[in-house]
Amino acid sequence: MPLPTPEHILRIAPTGTQRATLLFVPPLFEEANRTRRTLVLAMRALARHGLAAVLPDLPGQNESLVPLAQTDLHRWQEALAEVSATLDGPVIIASLRGGALIDHRASAAAWWRLAPIGGASLLRTLMRARVAADREAGVTSSLDSLQAEAATAPLLLAGNLLSPAMMGQLGSAAVEPVAPLRTVTLGSGADAIAGTPLWLRAEPGEDGAMAEAIAADIAAWSQTCGIS
Amino acid sequence: MTAPDTVDATLRALLADVLGLGEARAAALTDDSGLFGALPEFDSMAVATVLTEMEDRLGIIIDDDEIDGEIFETYGNLLAFSLRKVTD
Image 1 (cartoon, rainbow over the protein chains, first blue to last red):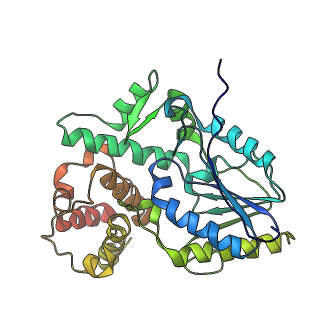
Image 2 (spheres, helix red, strand yellow):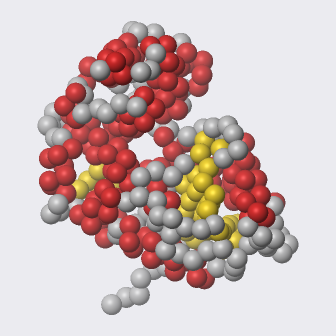
C-alpha cells in the first residue's frame, strides 16, 4: 500500500527568533474558504509579533488528496495531534468556529478559540442548504429524510460528501474543555474582537483590521500564559 | 419578546453579514426588495445560513415544514415571518 501523501502546511515565520508556533485550526467545510484570506493575513501579522504560524490542510479539505467521505472528526483530531507533535514549541493552538471541535487532542501550551460553534448547528445549516437546493430542483427532502439517508451511505451536503461516521460525530460534537484557554467572540468588550463574521459570507471577503486584531489578541494571550 | 423594530434591525444586520451587502444596501431594503432569485449572492447555502442565524439572533426555532420559497421572495415576507415567529 502506498504511503499516504503528507498534507500541505502553510507556514509563515518571523525573520528573527520565534517565540512560539501558532497552530491554526481553520473553520470546517465552506467556512474555511471564506476565512482563509483573513487567517493568512493574521499569520503575517503574528510574524511581526515574533510568532511563527502554521495552517495545515485537514485530510479531505483544501488541497488534500484524501476523499472527504473517508474522513471524520476523529481523524481530524488525530491529524492535528500529529502536526502539533512536529512543531517547534511552545505550541499555541488557535481555532476558529468548527475548528474548536477538533483542537483538544493535540498537545499545546495554550489554546485560543474564536467564535466556537457546536457541530449540530453546523450540520443543521449544511442539511438546510441541501433541502433548499432540492426544493429549487423540484425535489422534496427534509432534515429527517436526509438524516435517515445518511445512516447507511455518504450524503452530499452543499458540495461535501460526508460519511455516516462524520454525520454522527458532527451531530453530537461540542467544544471540549482545554486549559489554559481564551475564548473570544466577535463584537466589543474585553473578550471580543471587532470584525465581520466572514465565515457566514456568501462570497469570500477579507478584513485586514480583524486580522491585526486577531494577531494582537493572540500575542497578548501568549504573554499572559508566560510564553515569551 | 423581541420588539418589532429590533427584529427589523437584527434581520438587516444579518442579511448584511451573510450577503456582504454593506450597511447602506442593507438599510435601503424595502418590503418589496427581492431576495432569493433577485440577489445573486442569495443561493441555497445563503438561505441555510440565514435560517440558522435567524434562530441564533432572534432566539427562535424554525421547523423544516414552516419554510417555503415565498418566505425568501422579498424582504417584507422574511420580516413578516420573523415577526410572527418572535411573537408566537
